[in-house]
Image 1: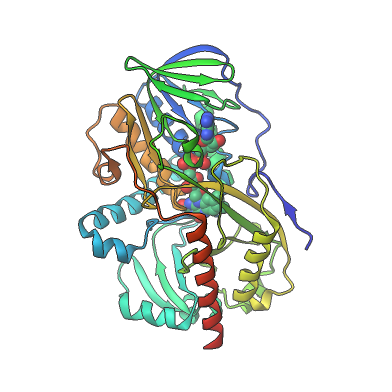
Image 2: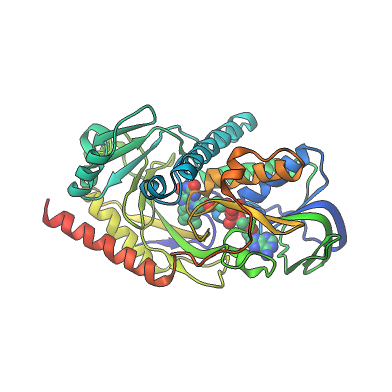
Amino acid sequence: MNMTYLSGSGWADRPTTLEPAADGNLSCEIAVLGGGLGGMAAALRLAELGHDVILVEADVCGWGASARNAGYVTGTVGSDPRILSRFYPDRAAGLFRFARNAVTHTEKLIASQDIDCGYRQTGVFSAAPTAAGFRRVRATTKSGKRSTVATADQAGIPPAFHGGVHVHVGGILNPGEFALGVRDLVRASTIRVFEQTPVQHVADTGDSVEIAVPGGRIRAERAILTTNAFTNQLEIAPRRLSTPVWVTAVETEPVPPEMLDDAGWTSRVPIVTTHLLMQSFRTTDRNTIVFSTRKLQMSRHPKADRLPDRAVVDDLVRGFRERFPTLGDISPRRAWGGWIGMTPANLAVAGQATPRVAYSMACNGHGLPQAPYLATLLADHLAGEAMHDDLRTVWRESPRFAPGVVNPATIRLGWLADRLTDRLGRLRR
Ligand SMILES: Cc1cc2nc3c(=O)[nH]c(=O)nc-3n(C[C@H](O)[C@H](O)[C@H](O)COP(=O)(O)OP(=O)(O)OC[C@H]3O[C@@H](n4cnc5c(N)ncnc54)[C@H](O)[C@@H]3O)c2cc1C
C-alpha cells in the first residue's frame, strides 16, 4: 500500500504563521487553557462580551482533534440513546436537545462568520451492520420528522450496510478548514493568543489562578480548562474526567463518481455503523472517501504528534473493503489520527474543578459541534448570565467521577464483538 502516515491533520495544511509563545509575567481576567474548538469558542464569546481574555495553546489553535476528526456535525449523543431513554428518561430529553442545539449553533457559526469549510446539510445515516440488526432497528424505530427508517436501497447506500436510520439533523464538513477558520476569527479578535505554550501547572490560590508556562506565569481571576484528551495531565483537573483515546482516520485516492454509483452509494449520505465501536464512511469535496474509528487505542500519556499504527490502518481498510467490495481497486492513500477525551459516562460535561477554575469536556466522538457549543454556554455562565438549560443538563456539581467503562479491555472486547457480529452477518447473508 502506497500510504502516507501523517502526524497532523489530513484535511488542511498546518498553519505556518504561528502566534508567539507566552513570555514573562502576564495577567488577565479570564484565561482559557487549550485552543481547540472548545477553547476558541469560549475565548471568542468572552471577548465578544467585553472580557479581557488570554488563550493558551500548547501547539497551534485548532490543530488537535478539532482539525483531524471525520467531520460529522452530528445531532446525536455519545451514549446509547435507548439506554439513556430507558434509565434516565428526564435527563435523556435534555441531552438529546443539547445535541440538536449544538448542531444548530455550529451551523449558525459557519453561516454567520462565513467559514469556508464545505458544510453540507446531509444528515447522517446510522447503518445496521447485519440484516438481523436492521430487523431490530425496524421493530424498534419509527420514522418521524427528524429521522427516516430505510433499507440500503431506499437510502442509496451500499447493500452491505443492509439499512438503518437516516437522521435528518446536521451533516458533514471539512474539519481542518472549519477549525482553522475559527482560529482566524480568534486571531482577528481582541483575545491575546499564545500558541506553542504548554500549560505546566494550574493553581487556584483563592484570590486568583496561577498558571505556569515554560516562558513565565499567567495570573488570571478565573480560568477555563478546555484541554480535552490532555486534561488528565493537569493536577487541578477532576480525576478521571478525561480518558485519552486515539482514533485513526484513512482517506482513499479520488473515486470516480460512476464507481460510487455502481457501489450503490448513490445518495452519498455520510454513514456511521451501529457497531459497539462504530465505523464511519463519508465522501469529501476532493472526491475521496474518508473512513474512521473501528479500532481505538489508549495511552495514559497522549503524545500530540503521534503517527497512526499500521495494524490499525490495515484493520480500517479491511472494514472498508467489506462494505465497498466493488471499490477493490481503490487505494487508501493517507492516514492520520487524533486524541479524543472520553468522559466517564461518554457524555458532555462541564463544572467547576475549583471555585475559580471551570472545565468543559464535550468529546466522546461528538465534540465537533458539542465542544464549541458547550464552551460557549460555559463562557456565558462565567460572564454572569443565568445558566442555560443545556448547560444545566450536563453540569456536574461535584468534581468527582466514578471510573468510566472505556479501558483497554472493554475496547478490545468491543472490537472482538463487532467482528463476531460482522462474521455472523456474512454467514447469514
Ligand atoms: C479521528 C477522529 C474522528 C472524529 N470524528 C468526529 C466526528 O465526525 N464528529 C464529531 O463530532 N467529533 C469527532 N471527533 C471528536 C472531535 O474532534 C472532538 O470532540 C473535538 O474536536 C473536541 O474539541 P476540543 O476543543 O475539546 O479538543 P481539541 O481539539 O483536542 O483541543 C484541545 C486543545 O488543548 C490543547 N492542550 C492540551 N493540553 C494543553 C496544555 N497543557 N496547555 C495548553 N494547551 C493544551 C491541545 O493542544 C489542543 O489543541 C473525532 C476525533 C478524531 C480524533
